[in-house]
Image 1 (cartoon, rainbow, N blue to C red):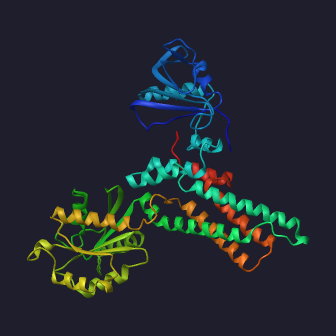
Image 2: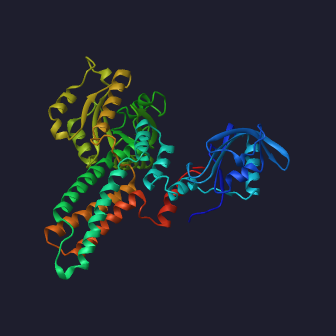
Image 3: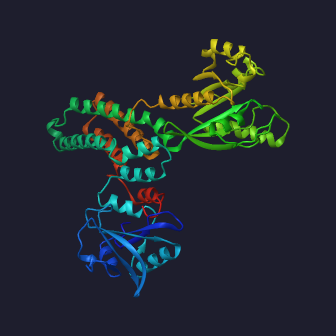
Length: 466
């Protein structure tokens, strides 16, 4: 699937702009641009050194299209590992169309999504996990998501995995050698050393698998479902969190009948807040659909804020609701609202009783707020951040890619099979099957083991120009 043609694409956003950047990559890219680019210095672009920038005019059939800056990157010292030229022109739609038409007439092919990064991978400028991190970096919407992508793009955990995989390959070679001397009953591969390597691999892989829970929510944004009875103040809470009137607020129960979503960033982590219909039995068909959607959103959420009015709720209904909605992995925050209506404005008697029986509630946090008190809203935001932050016990070594997670899970299973085989004194030929499986799955992460279908699926999700 490696296209050897010179490719071209716009590397900046859609629409007119002050500046637009076009990128060409391929063996003929410098020569192609040199044919229609006239430098102010009168020097030929084809003769210029790598990593130099030149001012001049771009001409099409003798007509000046624009005054541009042209950057030259010669192979192999470029992003793709090929000759690369970047053209910075003015960003009117007319100029963009004419520049693209010019180079297509010269023989350049429009780049497919991710084709520049695909070429970088195929030319060994980066491994597959780093290439995937490029796409994650482009779409990162928060500081935390950006940091996870940057760590992966810089090599992250893949360099260590590659070293351990190589040691496993060395053992595989020794075990294969044993098969050639099967009649002499000799062991070239030290089973004790192999067991130590397997233990190290198991520890590393389990740690990475555990980090996926944190990495996944950071990459996609933390979904937070705001649920509770009608008129508990869910829409008011959403508006207070967003600091804008995003949802309709009314004293009439059942106002919110659909799901309303919006996002904010708290201490570098993106949270997706979901205001849902009030949970109650209803004969109103439309409201019933909203209640069903609310429960669906809780099933997909990482955090549930169960909001209640301490003056108009009972302990039994709260316990029943949390028991009904609670599931493994869901962070539950029990939040009392409308404390501005309570004498002393601290918490209700109901909240005091709930705190005494907090173990029965199976909640991660309990506190009281008023949506009219900014300090309480800030406390809620800080609590949300700490609930997510404490999931990350792995520091910077975090995986957020589902493909990596599956490969590591399969590798761990194969490594477990190797360990059990050694314990059961399995023969070398059967042991090598499990070792080869582990080598295969570990190689899938960095792209040492791959195929055209996998690459096509990964790079088709990239934006054009990258």
